[in-house]
Structure formats: C-alpha cells, structure tokens
Image 1 (cartoon, rainbow, N blue to C red):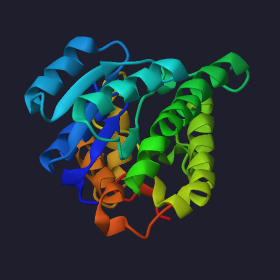
Image 2: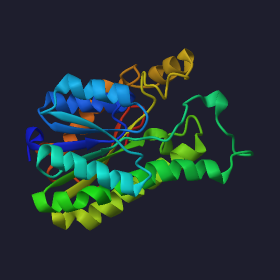
Image 3: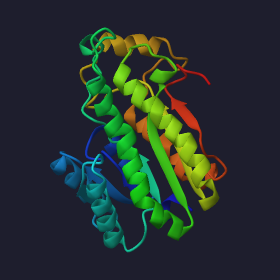
Image 4: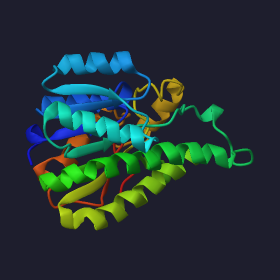
Length: 254
C-alpha cells in the first residue's frame, strides 16, 4: 500500500520527534491520527497545519487500553476507513540528562515499571486496538521507535534502555505472529537526537562528543530520523519485518 493511501496513527505526536514523524508522513500524502496526552494545543496546531481532511488530533494516554480503543474508533470514524499504520513513539516522562540519571546502586524497580508501562504497554495497546482494522484492510505496518543504547550504552539510562530492549523483543515476536496477516512490525532506533524536548537537558558538549564519534560527524536530527521511519511503511520494505534499523549517523553498526 502506498503511503498516500495509508491512515497513520502516531502516538506522542503533539511535539518533539512525533511532530517530525507526522510532517514526514504528511509530506508523502498520508492521512494522520495525531495522538497526544498533554500537549493539546501543539497537537491541534499541527493538525490544523495539515487540514481536517488530512489530520485529526486526539487525546489518549497510551497506557490506558480503553482510551486507546476510543482514540482508534474516533480516528476510523473521522476518515471512514481503518488505521493501517502505527508509529509507536509515545514516551513516558523522561529527561535525557546523564548527570541526573538514577545510578545502578539506587535505581528502584518502580522506575523500570514506569518505562515498561509506557513503552511496552503503550505499544501493546495501540497495536491491539488497530489490529482488527489492519486485518480488514489486508495490510498493516507497525513501526516501533527504539534506541541504540541497548547496543551502545554510552549513558546507562537503565530503566529506559531496558524497556526499549523489551520493545525490540516485542517487535520480533509480533512480526512472527502477524506476518501471515500481511502485517509487518519493525523498529527504527535512534541515538541522541538534536534536539527534542526530551534531549533539551543534554549538555552541548555531549552532543559534540557523540557527533565526533560518528562517521558522518554529526548528531541525527528528528527530521532525519522521521524520514527513515517512512521506509518501513512504504512498499519498498514490503518483504521486511522483524528488523531494527539504527539511524544514528553510523555510531552503531550492525
């Protein structure tokens, strides 16, 4: 299915990386369901940028399966067709500031629980809510947003990294389970992005250090990362599932 024929749900689309993903898909002609939790004004402004016939902004906490189901119903009603594509981008509150991280000797399991609930639980809720429509359409593309930190833990964000690693496992097991339905599940993993709301607390010298260690000698931007996500929704990846594409300027090489 061409991207212009897809209805795409992007979680956490009100700001940051989610907004850049939305703009990338809008540029290719997709219709968009823009999920937000708290950033109503930003999400509504983004939807207005694309127009009512192309986008709708809907509130839901992705950790609440009931709210996600209502969001999907509203999106389907608005466009009169199933959601075919999901970008699981929503992230629990987290600040990418290495100096403020919880270190190994003090981190509590509750911190892991928060990240697992938002990252793995949120993805599970959106996938399950959209599966009936994907099966009806005979097509589905699910793209989970990961991280390169579980391959290169330059900053040990223990809770966040563990949850993203679990999301990769979910990506692969769901790819195997849903493949016979022509539903593909993949992951796009970035490193530190320059700059999102989450990385705004990152000191400038950290950006410079990471850039110096990449072959491209730069830190990936949210717009560059967002464009890579298009691949897994496009016909160019029609035979690709269960994969993890690292988009970090070559810092991590698989």
